[in-house]
Length: 226
Image (cartoon, rainbow, N blue to C red):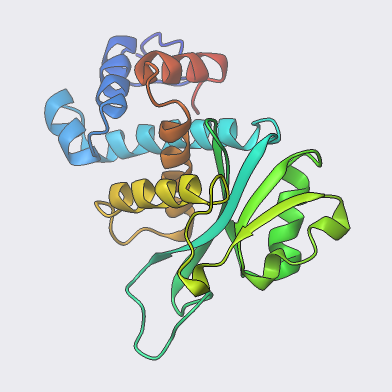
């Protein structure tokens, strides 16, 4: 007999047990830990965690465009660099483009490359034209003024320049460090799984300081799993 559970359309676990699972998720425990503490099967835990992360990713994608002071940068996730392969587009890595509103939220997107057309299309779609954009000196950011971003300031990492007053990208670089440290415990992820974990990092960062347990329950109550 199916238990009544307002968070899951067709649930084989009770609402109380699901709330317990979400509480452990909010504490950032992994699937083996949650399975051990909750008494649930590991495959069951993974299924519900995947559903929770999918709802989180959908929420992140629906966020409003960024405005104000916005930092942009790209980073590489995955296996260690292959000998002889250097620079942007390093072999075997997943490329992620990120934007962060200072004192606000971050947005990330997996991209196929760091080409100018790729990165600037995301900027145009996610950043309002009246914003101040901060970037490094990478050539893919050339011409932002020509497409309407009149306030574009750059820092030249190639000349060991990392901050000049308010001209820096320390915010987005700080997020990369947080995300990579957190993702290090998840190994052998597929591209789709990596996307969900990346969006979870984004969500946790954007709502840091808030009650993630209640926030996740609210999201899923509005759009139940499965």
